Image (cartoon, rainbow, N blue to C red; front, side, top):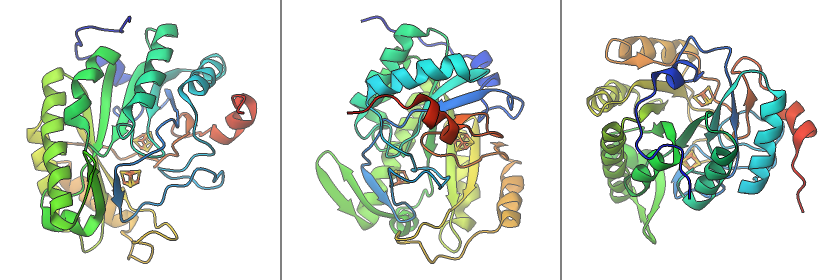
Amino acid sequence: EKYYQADFAPDKEKTKTHPCFSGCASGSARIHLPVAKKCNIQCNYCLRKFDCPNESRPGVTTRVLSPEEALEKYLVAKKSVPNLKVVGIAGPGDALADFEFTEKTLRLIRAQDPDVTFCISTNGLMLPLYAKEFSRLGITHVTVTINALDPAIGSLIYKTVTYMGTTYRGEAAAAILLANQLSGLRMLQELGIVCKVNIVMLKGINDEHIPEVVNKVKELGCFITNIMQMIPVTGSAFEHMPLTSNKEIMAMRKKCGQILNQMYHCKQCRADAVGTLEHDLSLEFEKLATPRLE
Ligand code: SF4
Ligand code: SF4
């Protein structure tokens, strides 16, 4: 099977045109293809929904696509969305929980398009298992969400972690996730893959701890961190948690900006987002380009 690049070389040009890794690439568009249905952990702030056209946040998509449908959608987008530079797999579950869907989607697209940037977003649990595959698939950009370095803090954030067929809870769950996130990041660094770490700022849980996370991921070669607000979701365990204000988020970003590059322009996009970060076309595009589903 033909892969994009047998040996990956870090690609500065692709970073310059990725709207989430470079503040200067605001004119570039990206498409998220929602092929990753399952998740292997349960964060207390998440409730995945697959049929919610009116909400905008990670984990939301109008529908989950098969790899073939995703290819069809991408080919329509390529013709109709100006300056489309990036294909991302960002849910609605985890891109690596059922890697075969992510992998097949990217292979199908690469066979038609040798240039578009491939980007995936993951909780990092399965990174050590799949990181080496990323280079062969031509994935140049990866986002890992790491909310805590201390399993005691992690145990307040993650309800369960299902790893190699066993479901863990409490600190054991958080410790397994953390070990894989950190060793996964190290592997990505060795492969020359550009990494962003997302951190969800949770009041009274990890807010004081965030600079420590940023320092650690910097040491492991991470390029940029994205400190994000939690979006309260009805029905999730954190539904009633006090919110971090914009002001508090900006202050934390500024503080951590002394350690590492910060993303100040994240839009917390849907898993089926299309367009530039400023102008999301996902709903209009859905009507135009919905692949034929059975
Ligand atoms: Fe939801 Fe993502 Fe957490 Fe999975 S890793 S539970 S999809 S927020
Ligand atoms: Fe970029 Fe943030 Fe949207 Fe992800 S959620 S595509 S990082 S703007």
